[in-house]
Amino acid sequence: AMDMSLPALPEVTRSLHAPAATVQLTLTACLAGMAFGQLVVGPMSDRWGRRRPLLAGLAVYVVATVLCALAPTVELLVAFRLIQGLAGAAAIVIARAVARDLYDGVAMARFFSTLMLISGLAPILAPVVGGQILRVTDWRGVFVVLAVIGVLLGAVVWVKLPETLAPADRHDGGVGETLGAMRRLLADRVFTGYTLAGGFAFASLFAYVSASPFVIQEIYGASPQTFSLLFAVNSVGLMVMGQVNGKVLVGRVRLDRVLGVGLAVVLVAATALLLLSLGVFGETGLAPVAVALFVLMSAMGITMPNTQTLALLRTKHSAGSASALLGTTSFLVAAVVTPLVGIAGEDTAVPMAVVQLASALVATACFLGMCRPWKSGTSMKGGGV
Image 1 (cartoon, rainbow, N blue to C red):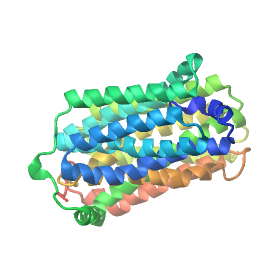
Image 2 (image 1 turned 30 degrees about the vertical axis):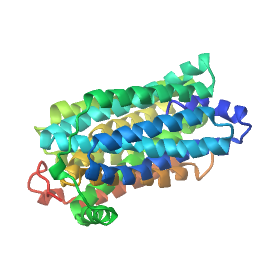
Image 3 (image 1 turned 30 degrees about the horizontal axis):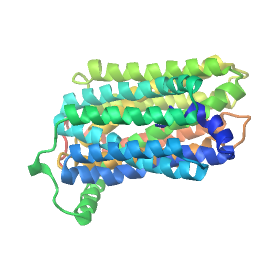
């Protein structure tokens, strides 16, 4: 939903006779919907189970996507994209909650590494697919394809996904109990530490996603094809390290130690990017910047799944609410820091590097100061919130 429509944005601008800044709001609306929708759907899944809210979310997603395809004005397109994001959040938050229902400890860490593989494929394949769709149809056709994908996902869930939350584990309370569950989760210092560490690590990644097209193409003069290649290579690095995490490290090395190493590598890469951007090493070309970005992105393959696993290990009976807090925190932090990457204009990559380094420093501080891994005993046991 986010990436497949990217190649169509210029055509949307022309078709709806709207300024580019307004068309960009379609992405902002979808991102905001995905953030806040998780806060609604996650607790719902703790009360009514995983299957029904997921199917309902997919149904609304399909309807909203069809409405996007039919939108006559950019204002309505922004509104429908907000609804699309709100409904699509069901898939994001419930996927993590289902994983917590089915797996624990090492098995859950490995499963999250598999989710990282799937997530890493999206930024590689979706823009390419969107571009190919535009060869045979217009931007509205992209949303038609997204609606068809939503229908197929709904059919797969209907046929293949059983209910994973037993009735005895559900919450019968209303809004008060939901807020109470979230308050208890946030009161758990370790859970909140892992949540914030994951959120700011995600902000460092999203700063790259939002700024790299400008930095690589405009500042370093690379062609769109070169940018696409580098973007794909970095995504592959993230996926490969995610699989190394799940297949090699998990079960052999404590998760908090792996997470600590991942955050340290992100810090080193972000520091190198800042020094390169400031010209400390003199005039440098694209190659060293590309290497530093590759290292940073690859380290996310062991950082992000392990923050999620370690946070969810703290909870069993409020997995939906916990998953909602994890997802919403990541999206909101990313949404807040991302505009900062262009604050100094179009002639420098310093803001991107500063945002990445600052985000990595905050993530590391939350991990060390709140999670205190040296006191955790074993990283594969949760606290049972």
